[in-house]
Image (cartoon, rainbow, N blue to C red; front, side, top):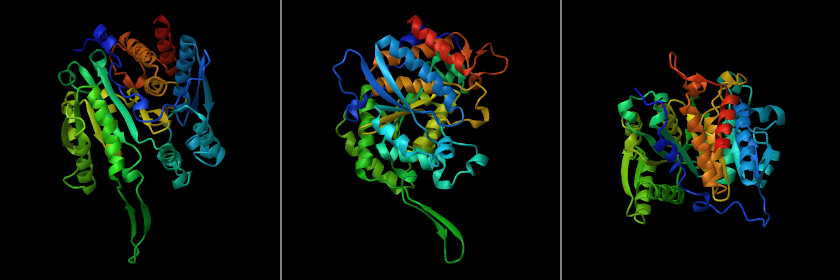
Length: 402
């Protein structure tokens, strides 16, 4: 049913407008010209938990090749982060790791987390998401989360959607506000006068928080197809009413960008039924958390979704998927989103746009040759299943060919 091979058009358009916002458009430039002939950048490496070390090894493999190809040096600064950090250092985000992240020009982070049973071995406030991930975002104010949902027609066989829905391919980007909302609002757990347990969690946003993510979304839409879908729940939530008002006010400065407002539940439905209607989608924190994972589902795997988390002075890059502890150590994890996060880092933090596109093209070329990792394989298909390290090797080989 599908044309298995990527067309030349597919290959030439790889990452043509996935990461259209350079970091400088959001934050201060991270890299200053040292005056030396060979540039040197510091990257904090937080390999995380579960499959994190395995896929990070493939990211490092690509970074080392990029060094050779571009006469630059990456000083890689490994740091403990997540559940493994708690067990080894007594804290899921140790002070030593904070210091090296402060020193780094960019942060490359692997997935974190444990399964439900193992997570009970860690105090609630020290569990990886609460004790490491949210503090990382808060420390660097990484308010703008870019999650590309990209599936060219040539690899549409990975998607569970029908060919007629995918058409010529899916190419949209979810922009998620990352440091506000329910995840960062006031929290209270207690027992009331009747002896019943309760919990209060507050969804909080102020107009400045909304305005800055709206501006990022409009800037992105302006560089793409000039259409922005604003995702909200204003029929129920007062926070969405304010959100919509601020988006409208920011939009006055972008008269050439068409804005469409859509309820979050409807957006979830349309992502499955007609994803090609979307180009740039902007939303608050929890909506973005959920819908971006749905984006991975329509691609066929969260293993195909890298992401960038950008703040005023620093950014970190990570796969959108979890740590998959059930397959850790088996060598079958998909490193695509980890390597894709490297590509986003090269483009957005280091302004190495062409090398980023080379990496995207190399990964698509590997798929075009019929290879895939276990998460993308289907029984009875002609796909040649490969291990984690083999995928990295093939990507490196394609880069060398180019």
